[in-house]
Image (cartoon, rainbow, N blue to C red):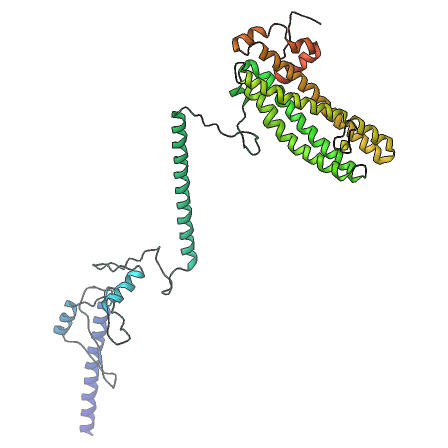
Length: 390
């Protein structure tokens, strides 16, 4: 009994001492786990199969404190092995640079550029590359446009230095194809008659269109022939362009000169043909089988003689057409006589300003208060003698 009691007493004493040493080791490990680089030594706890623990000696603790562990992010990457089992430095480095990661030399975390950041090792999709391509294309086009503008400006400067003036296209305003500026190119005394010619051209355009519409409606109502319809279309197209390029442009060029006989002579020829055409269209004499391609006086009479709604519609449209061509005829005559008076007096600017106070041929034909006041309101002037009253 005494032997058994003494053996148990020794076993309990050794267990108590071992538990005390284990508790002391746990306390030291708690102090060392306050943080990386904390105060105090770090105790390593060893284990066995029966879960018994032993404290690390002080010399081993000091040795471990002198050699801190290296963080995982500071450890250089290990290159991936090649299919043959060998690691190549070049490929690993190229892959690292492709991903846009740069390893720092010190203890700082790695720098990852935002522009080249990838998700799960996947590179940016084709949409980003397409956007960059489009931006480059737009920039290249803008540069080409700037070069062309500079080249055109350089050519214009050379032309101006050589005495050639480049005039920008400003007419018509909806889609400029020509340069037309009465106030800039026509001398001030000649501007009213130029405006009269321009308004006469615009009314003639309306008359050509109205004549084509009238003949077309009469044709579809059975009051005309196909030949009349075709010739009316040709007359409208050729008449509009010829009245601009021959009649009005010849007047425009003549008024820019100081009474040039050639310019004025060309205008008089074209204007005479235009007046005869307006007179023909207004009367529409029944000569030949193609007399119906203009809806004038005789065509109007034929339409009303048919009777019924078709005859009434055709006759009314012919009346409207006659009114337009009558205005063209009167304004053309007025413009012709006014231009003839300017040419007869020499066309000199100072001469013209002085002689505008005297009687002119246009004033002798059309001079009265109503016509003169209407001309001044429309064109800004009239060939009128204030000293002579009719």
